[in-house]
Image 1: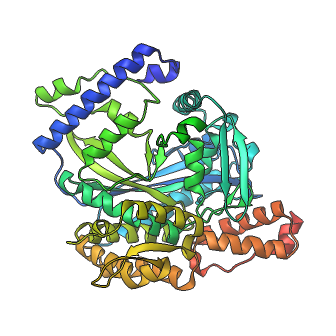
Image 2: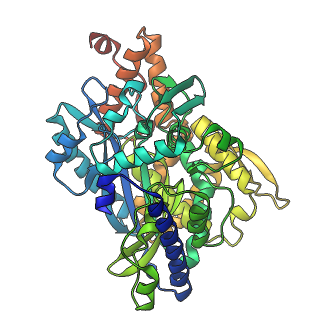
Image 3: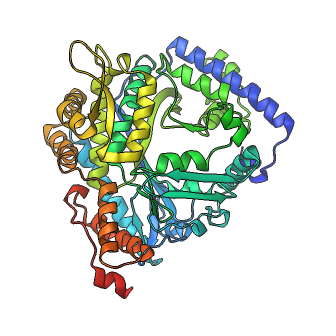
Length: 506
């Protein structure tokens, strides 16, 4: 695999062999599922956060290689752009004071990484899209110097066959062209993993799909793209367009994008893996030497490398994951909808809300997805991205007569979903102190109608009203965001505005 990544050259035989190997992997996965070879329930969760590097002026800093060299920890890795890093938290068992433990680990790790970044005249910030990123920052020369990123870029560009068009209309409109996938690096997120058994997978995935719009609405933190105010959570449309391998004609034919919400509720994990293979051509047709079916015949467990690699190039917002630890296979749901930040407390509150709500909804005898058309869930996702905490979502009516009603997301969360999340955390065995503290952060966001996106927008407009031009207002907003992020109080408590005199002096 490594040789192919370095070479970056594929011929027709590579693609033919890869397609055959992926089909063998699918067959092996089906056999594993039928033989019930998967790990027992262990209530394990995991967390990844993508980060930005910024200079003291609030502008992106292209120094991730130097920062990583100083950090010298496997917990921190490169990401697509030179202004990106990723931090990975080891798996934890849901229960007890797990969320406070996660918060302490994150605070310690990010504080250390920030100190190392300061040596390069930069700092670390958790935010969905850096407001000061410009189109000139997102060029192929600013992709991280890692072979796999160059190869992925080349393959997506080749598959598309033309420049990438980014066109998002919200409060303002962005419309521009790019020659690489570099704009994808603008989107930094939190990924929440949950290990589940095959029999529970479909219910957990369906539950995660149902609540994805709620997560986005309450946690939105990416209102600016290339200096313009667009959607409250602009990552999803930007990410989809930046990774879109379809030409205009293929889009017109209804060909599915590689980044998407989905189109139906599922009955098994296998359905998602099979769809990914059936609908999406290989981007990285790199074959492993393993024969998955022979490994199974010999009583072993295959790594399914080709299927895992292909699955990683289909960017579902809730992604199925196959993993192997100590020779035992497992399945995970990877929730990818949340932006990074604003603070560690906000990130952990979002996680607590998600894990509690998924548990409660997946165990409901009359689940929400049995009463909500999938098209309504997809519409909710779009609405939540556009309007954030002010969104109104389609939701099954609690009345006996049933039906679908449009409900303000803050009311839905306060009246129905927070009690469910509380019950779900109780079912996980999370201690009351953790439960109440972190769900209380979600409740206060809804009560005050404040999240990262609304704070950024309000602070930016306050700066403009004080006389700063657009670029200076965005930089001042970013610097103030960084200052408050490192102080650590949750975003709903942040004062709006910047010190205009200090901003002008820069």
